Image (cartoon, rainbow, N blue to C red; front, side, top):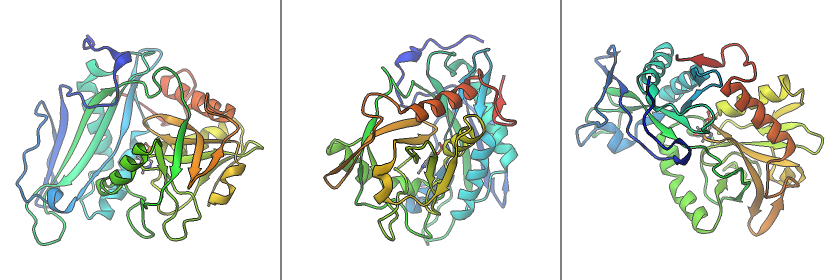
Length: 341
Ligand SMILES: *Cc1c(COP(=O)(O)O)cnc(C)c1O
């Protein structure tokens, strides 16, 4: 298979249309058989539920070329599972989990020419999503839905080397108790846009959201979970029912325990204790771990000992081990790597 003529190392994180995408429609209580199509556009009625009441959700994962030349995805079954949980919360029909994994497989295979080569640092980003597609004007769930998966090649997250970021404690909330913070609903992102634009305007890279009930506990950023390392090298991640369960974060905790022999804790993390940690990072599919050098809490600065030049030593080890597993030079736990071709 001949690769497309793309300058892989200069790709950013933006949409590029690829050859094929997967579409399946839900009508009269059932999903159709689904198909690959070349048509990148979606045409819907003006009153489609997704436009009026934001009944939509999504997932995000990546396909990589491993050192020995295979194209693989990382734990797509967990994305399938999470989308099922999200769909239930939004009163959408679940797209069967085995069919989700199969759809991802088919789309990546059909766009293999767009999967960046090993060593480029670039990857093929995969976006499964679903929306209510029939006209709905009285507030209720749609009766018809569309499930789609498209792909787009994206560049290395850390272009020109890793740079720790500066984040601020945010006065806006991301998720309410008993709300939708734990599911990947588009609406969680719509209402975070104001806060992230405001953060960028004020010179911060990201928002740190606290629990909205007490504003004393660390939750997450708009699109990544926190990971902290204590001074005696325990890996700590915040636990809360309003945090989105990051697959990267769950995988890193496993790596910490089973590959690096570190102690791990998933527990409530109070803002008051953040100053005592040695390292801080943000976990998500996009960057795996993005190191945080500084947190600004209403003028008060927390500067981590790892500094603003490089990742802290433990976060670096976690990063190297997980990316090593993904790229195929470290043996993966059973079932983590899904081989496409
Ligand atoms: C998608 C997402 C993450 C990261 O999850 P991964 O499965 O690791 O990519 C974290 N927080 C939020 C709010 C998200 O939407």
